[in-house]
Image 1 (cartoon, helix red, strand yellow):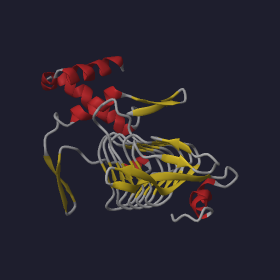
Image 2 (cartoon, rainbow, N blue to C red; image 1 turned 45 degrees about the vertical axis):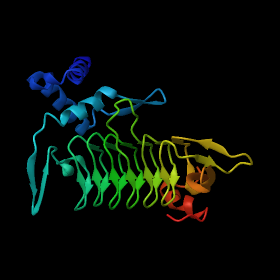
Image 3 (cartoon, rainbow, N blue to C red; image 1 turned 30 degrees about the vertical axis):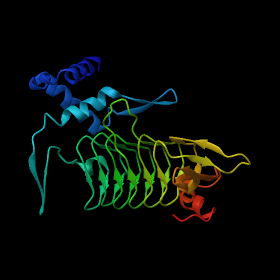
Length: 271
């Protein structure tokens, strides 16, 4: 692994090395292992998520060593540098037309892709539903038994290489048209209501206590979140800007699959 990492780092520092078979093979090997799930762009180590920058570099370097080609899928024609994933049946993954995943993304057994899209470097955990028109961006990490509802947008990140990808931990539920970008981290069993937008600068405010608690870039485990706004003063006057409000917690006593929907309904929030 260290030899593989060194080849990638050397090629990153000197792009002329991309003309040599040894370095091309190293990049191809990393992408193949990402596709199979034996390597991940980000992984949980001793309770903390760690981003493997050298693997992100390999993903970026994969583009210049690939040539554009026409890809024909029945009557559909694409023109791209990346292959599409295959062997869904062998992997135990259900893909509904027109669900598409790029080679170099990993889907664990039991994943269901409705007409949706998963980009290179992404990881989608066992039993997760990627619903209609949902997108999982490059290098995003999605946990087991999550539900990405219709139109959910999970942002991708390649550069800068030190930037953390979006991380959605196990058993999270994201309501319709929710958007999570810029490396935001949802801990386990978080529930986002419809149209919640989370960026690195979005204020995430826990309003369940007498004194509000503010977060940025992370949503604590089992939080139930809805869209909100707060007043902000500008030179041209005071206006309301978007934020996200934590209005409660999922009940641990409730069956997880049931509580995905009930957690919102209990708080009168639309799914």
